[in-house]
Image (cartoon, rainbow, N blue to C red; front, side):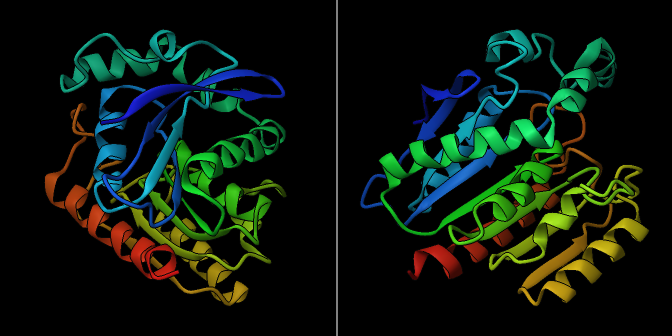
Length: 249
């Protein structure tokens, strides 16, 4: 069962869920939450991945703004109106306030703590919603360390900004798997195609697919966006890439 620990970063203290396998760890995985926050659903997901044999660390990437309790919802977001109200409460200010420079400060601290528990060796990074952007940037920041990247219902992976997340892929060695939400304005078919071109140019192994009928947020069972079939598909594809890149090492 996931436990709540604290990570010391140069900018402060971040809470994090840590989940460990019953037996010997097959490797470490950094898990980057969605915009909704570090909450029981994230604990459930890291427990699932730990059940495959991996040590999983999911930090509260909003720690500069507040604690997990302060930045996570209290309402039941399975109600579409409650979900809309939560996102209208300033959530995107936190998301947009997490800059690439801040991520560059945080990622080495997260990776160092993960290594304390998982041991040295290659790691995976998986992210959801805005967390997919952090997972991609993690590979760019730690190209010799990150062997697998998962990004699911990610938004804003491809933008016109010179520092767009997808530009971090060049020079990395990781294998990538992306499962995009269908009809997602934050990751259009044109964006998905551009991401594929970047992956192809980088010469890395990858999957880059749109999940038909799956809305943005499809993995999050505690919201109205959850899609059981797409969620299970994501777990299967994530497990496959981790087992191939970490589990066999």
